[in-house]
Length: 250
Length: 280
Ligand SMILES: Nc1ncnc2c1ncn2[C@@H]1O[C@H](COP(=O)(O)OP(=O)(O)OP(=O)(O)O)[C@@H](O)[C@H]1O
Ligand SMILES: [Mg+2]
View 1 (cartoon, helix red, strand yellow):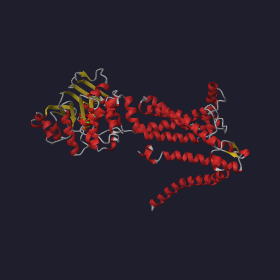
View 2: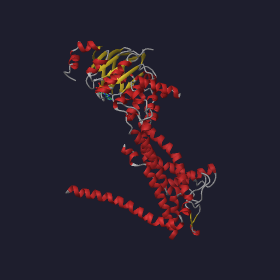
View 3: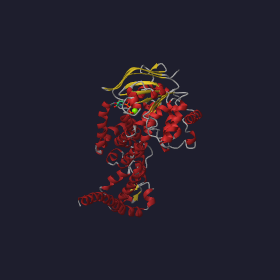
View 4: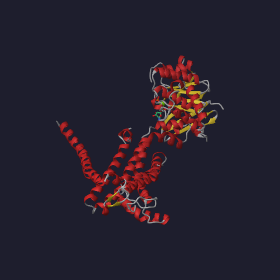
């Protein structure tokens, strides 16, 4: 089953407040799509609508269609299965207060893996895929909270990968990190795109330009423009997009 | 100037506290320790017979009594209390919470003599009917104490679960975990130190409780051989004999209080500042 994400005529409300207005967007497989736009324009809202983390918010309501791999996200789908297929990494690294091993094993255990050997294999593979294995392989039993911020964020990516998702939603994954950790995560994300559908929210224009294949620009809850990253940054078709990416506002 | 005056006032207030504790300690130890010496430490702590008329002052039955009754209260009260706390923090519908919250507070405010009455009129007959015997037993006292420590354990557990940052919960959900799994596997572990503090506070209350226990425990100063037999706790021993004890008997009771005091002190040291929920 594919993991293409299709959003059609989506409007999202928090109580009486409309956070997204009539957004239509295709997010293709095996590529990186960046969401950019000023604070409060609805980037996180759209991300959390895709894996239904918005269900937690009281007064949340979505109109329109969201499908992942052709399946309607808001039509009788098993939410835990959806979230298993669509992983998420948060802005602030949030490893659980337990060992590094248990953090990565959390997802597989949640989905029923009990055998020690299987867990160990899954943990090692995920940590390798997240490019953090060499840094933590000697201290898997130590608390995850003893890692640096950048390591914690890569651990969170490993934790998300361990579930075996097809898509990854990253909400400003590097905004709390130093340049070196940031470039590690950028490299990592670039490698992961071969196997995953990746969406990344970022406030960093260079980052979007560097790593993404496609970019979508949002303003006040509306999708202003989207397309191939190179084109959007070199020849934006909308004045608002140009103003934003050249730093004239936002 | 005004600053200095205020500081002096605060300092004085703080000193009153410390002086009170110090005075109680001095009173207890000055009267109690010599009594232990007089009776003989071994015969006091390990003696199995408490017969002041014959000069026998062994408090082993009372030490065991306190331990058994407290252990029973913990076995019944801790799982119930912790689960209720978890329920109230993360599963309870708001409307039910408006009922449960005040109920738990009220439970905490009920005077212990009323728990005792409840024990005598409801629990003792129930235990007698179910298991035979007099009905006044370790089991009965444990049930009453479990009820009495519930509010502490519930409210501390609930508060420490509510204090866990929401991003642990969200992180777990995002991995495809259910609400239940997220609460029990990602949220509760982080609240563990707070919950432990609540449990220890509850144990402290159970060890120190007197009135309700005296009313339902039977109070025989004999080492019990089963949970349906009566027991006398350290606290009960003091309050039962205090009215008429004189001389060495009286000082033996103060020595009993020393033992109780040391128990409570040890329990409080277990919840050292580092593991208190407020310090997180
Ligand atoms: N839980 C919520 N309840 C009510 N309104 C919310 C909630 N979350 C977001 N909003 C509103 O929805 C709008 C979009 O917010 P969102 O978090 O999606 O913005 P964003 O583009 O991610 O911003 P940022 O770049 O600052 O992260 C904002 O107006 C915000 O106030
Ligand atoms: Mg955001």
